Length: 129
Image (tube, rainbow, N blue to C red; front, side, top):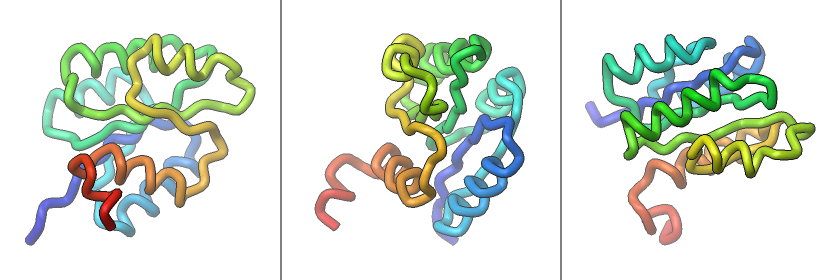
């Protein structure tokens, strides 16, 4: 049995949760989905994750704080931030919170899979394939 990267998804839209969980699981990732920042921190403190996907809405300071907390407690875990297209300040918001990379919603599954793959695979591995 091989190693399955563990991905934590912090998302509050059921349809998005389902599609992300299914797509990531289908390519071999182990996926945990939570809706609240405090539950995400509890998960992160209880076991090892390879990456975190966080939906950052412009009005949700709790999730921005979550990304900051992840950066502080788990600096090696890459964080992929998601934002609505109306969130004009996603780059500022993402950088202020310390996310590793970002995607604008609605997210194409192929784009999500590629971003996650690039975030968690050893550097250079994906470029040579």
